[in-house]
Image 1 (cartoon, rainbow, N blue to C red):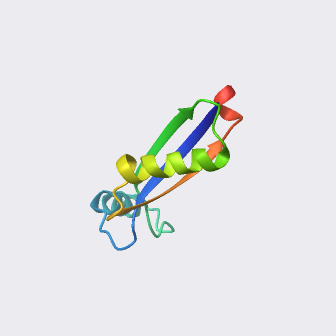
Image 2 (cartoon, one colour):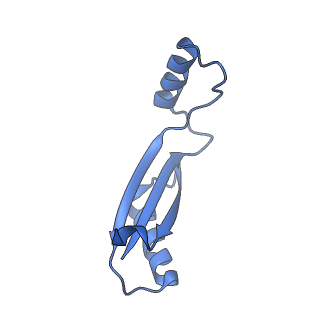
Image 3 (tube, helix red, strand yellow):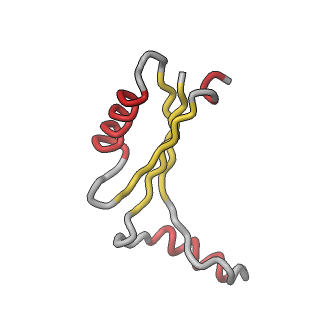
Length: 87
């Protein structure tokens, strides 16, 4: 089994009012050293054994492109951990 961790964030050109609100709140709380906040989505996918690395990469990219990320507004990246899913 493999555990795939998918991270989805807005592209730099997209306004993210929720992240701006968190950043403003941090500033009001006295955390002036925080310059920027990114807010996004996180997914964990547990995948059964049996696929090659290339096939798994292709499947995860397809899932992200079709469902998890809006390619007009968001970027994504993922990590595949084949040992963590076995725990």
